Amino acid sequence: MNDPTVRTTRTVWKTLAAIAIAAGLVAGCSATQSPPQHDAQSGVAAPAPAPRLASVDNFRDVAGAGDGYPVDRGHMRRGVLYRSNALTPDDHDLASLSALGIRRVYDLRTTLEIEAKPDVLPTGAAYVRHNIVGDDQGSAAMGLSSLRSADEARGLLILANKNFVTDPDDRAEIAATIRDIAAGQGPQLFHCTSGKDRTGWISAVVQTLVGVNRADVMRDYLLTNEYSAASIDKAASAAAAKAGPGTGEAVRVVSGVFPEALGAGLDEVDRQYGSMEEYARSGLGLSPDTIDALKAELTA
Image (cartoon, rainbow, N blue to C red; front, side, top):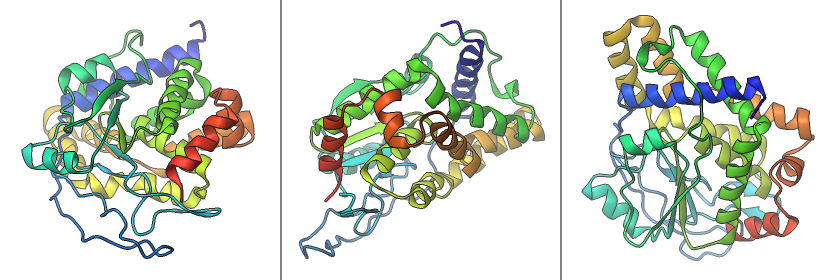
């Protein structure tokens, strides 16, 4: 790969992965479950809302809550596609995950991240790896001191989200992940380390392709700040104690999400391709049949 911009953005991911590991981004919310709901159109019992998991705190249903996010001719189906942060559940949460009948888990992480926190799979789930950003990331400063300010952290995440659009290697793995999801192997889950950047991008692309409006896509993306609030606070406080307040605020930024990060990627799609559909066709190489299969799998 000869593009120096791509090399620069790949060092971003090496740094972000190291920070996530060094900061110990562990889950911190209380696990709760909601009672079953009914599909507003059919009256048939719908899948129960995704459980809140204490040990995998950014786990949630890509379809959202209630009847699922509205699309042109219906809504997203709940209970078929989930997203999360690192899949390291305790015994209680592993039982909750296994009860969902998840058949495939797509791990979007680098080798460094996987070695630090290997997946613990739900019963019956197959493991599939799609290393979105790759391991050939060049040299980068590692550890908590790599970022010195919140502004620097915001700039890195904005650049990283643009890279999902501009880097052909990233696009190839994104495409492979979406093709697998469209194939419909039963309930599926995809995740990275914090469940917000690589995972957030896959979720935003899938939601947009099946017809979720941009406002709902952005609101769903921002839920990380709610679901992982305790983890974000813990990571930022630990980083500040170890490396100073500037690094603490930087870690707070890279541990959470903000609209301009995802917005930068979506704006890059519009600038280069004109629409998410064209990004899917020309940038990701997804066929019309794959996009149709994705809609059939994820909407009702």
